[in-house]
Amino acid sequence: MEINVLNLSGKETGAKVQLPESVFGVEPNDHAIYLDVKQFLANQRQGTHKSKQRNEIAGSTRKLHKQKGTGGARAGSIKSPLFNGGGRVFGPQPRDYSFKLNKKLKSLARVSALSYKAKDNNILVLEDFNFDAIKTKTYIQMEADLNVTNDKTLLVLAGVENNNVYLSSRNLKKTKVISVEQLNTYDVLNAGKLILTTGAVKTLEEALAK
Image (cartoon, rainbow, N blue to C red; front, side, top):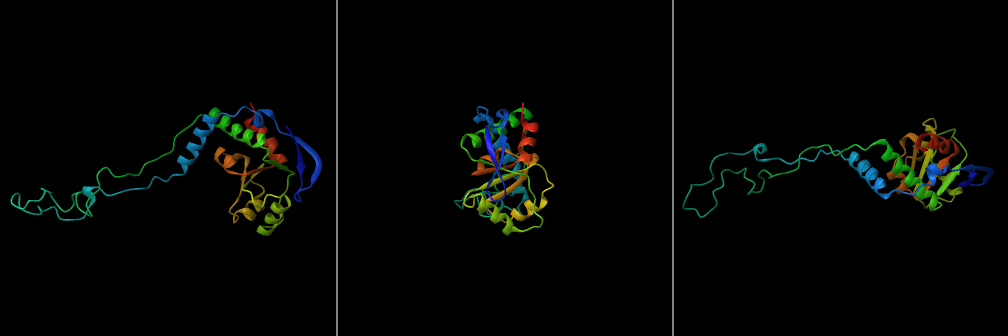
């Protein structure tokens, strides 16, 4: 798939870049995408939820009333789960939700997500660039020139050397800037428009092409 390269003003530079079929033209595997997204979201969970069990509640353990003659249940103490403020039965405990997937499956999921974007014509390719200073206004102007202001965008850079671009974008709610190393299936699918630099396309081909 061949696509025109744009500059920061949204105009065609006259250059074209070939999106490799092995990365942007495969038959998407929905199950691989599901597993990779599930892993990504699971890994974000802190797993710090906790409730107190009966042995962790502060309170007297004395018998509340005599064994017979009251017409009430034989609750042993005020810490019983039967009462407000008592311990919780089978409550949540801290745990790790993360799980592992093999590299081939994760790679298949990512090329599947990228192929969906290419199929829907939701990919833009920019010439390699950097900002001289950290200015959110400059990034907003770039998005306006590219006509993606109202879209949720994911900008993928070849590496982390473009730190000014990342810092200029991080206050924008609908914008995310990552490097090729940070690329994941969830962010690709969650973005309305995928913006790649020419360097990122080349790096992606080296990283994901079979």
